[in-house]
Amino acid sequence: MPQYRLQTLLEMRERAEEEAKQAFSEAMKAVAKEKDALAKLEQDLEQRKANRKQRVQEFLAEVMKKGVGASGMGQMNRFEDRLKDEEKQVALDIERQKEAVRQAEQLVEVRRAEMADAAKEKKAIEKHKDNWKKEIRKERQAREELNQEEIGNTLHLQRTRAAAKAGDE
Image (cartoon, rainbow, N blue to C red; front, top):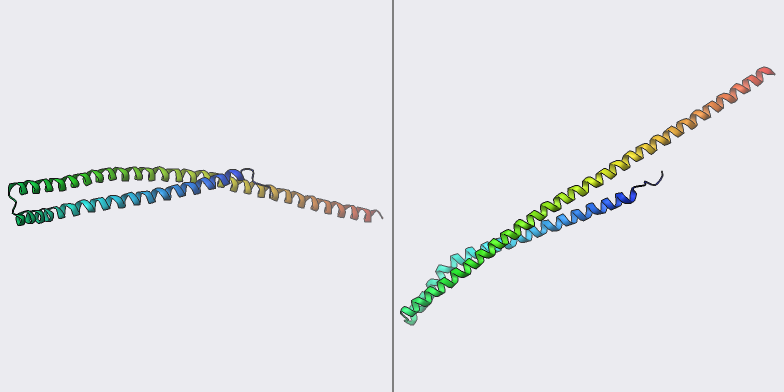
């Protein structure tokens, strides 16, 4: 069978499809990583909120034990404000992380589309190659049939001549 003239293109499309699959896989891993980071931040925020009251109570008990009056209450309020500020910072980090997750998911969709396009392009070349193979087989079959017909005609002609020669003698 002759060499398929678009074999190099087919190989390029196969490599492109594999690269697209790899890029899609990496994008999926990135989404999972971003979602894990988001879950950790959300868990951290929930834990901070749950622990804030307990920490304020512990600080208050410590201040009362020392016997500090109004200044101790001010310190306690500042301490609670600092804890709330930390919670706000974590909440901002969560929003940034949500945006990172959205961007990673968008990249996954882009990679999915690229992978589908690469597969479609490869499939088109494969279909062309299959049609080419069918055409080559068809041409080969036609040549074989023609050769068989010529052999049959030659044998018939030889027999006819032999019979005519035998009839002349």
